[in-house]
Length: 166
Picture 1 (cartoon, rainbow, N blue to C red):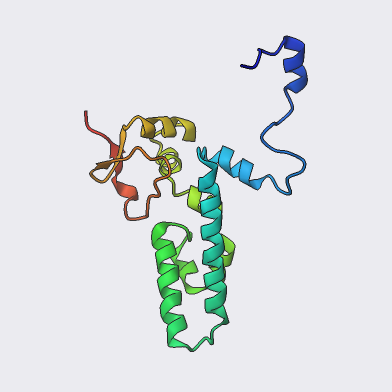
Picture 2 (cartoon, rainbow, N blue to C red; picture 1 turned 180 degrees about the vertical axis):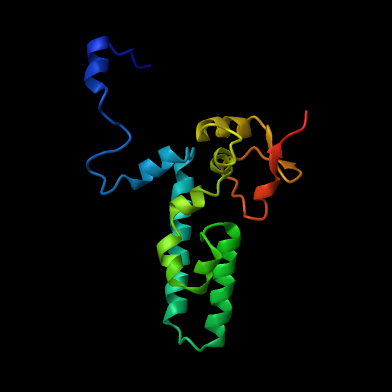
């Protein structure tokens, strides 16, 4: 058990951030985890790996000849699936693979998480409050009550986010 800090100790440590260290190359992961209230840091690494593999796939598809049937088919599949998930912002960006390089990020995946979507739909004031409501089982997507805060909501399911009845 750690003792409670005295007033002068608290005052000295007020501007110190213990979640980020100078030895880290970047503090992006800590900032994203804090901003989107990601409770498991392993979720961040999973999203990061997923972004890397999507960018790698887009790069490999772009290296194929432009008139290839295989490239056209898989390019449209990838771009339409990312748009349907809500990772790509608009239908205008569906035409290009370069949009995958620009717009696919961990933040894009985090914006599709249920607590963030609830704050955007004005069902909760903050992401932290939305996280509590989800953990307590007050929210459903479609007919299923959701208790997992890492639930990704697609564009088609966005309209079905509601409160659990009684």
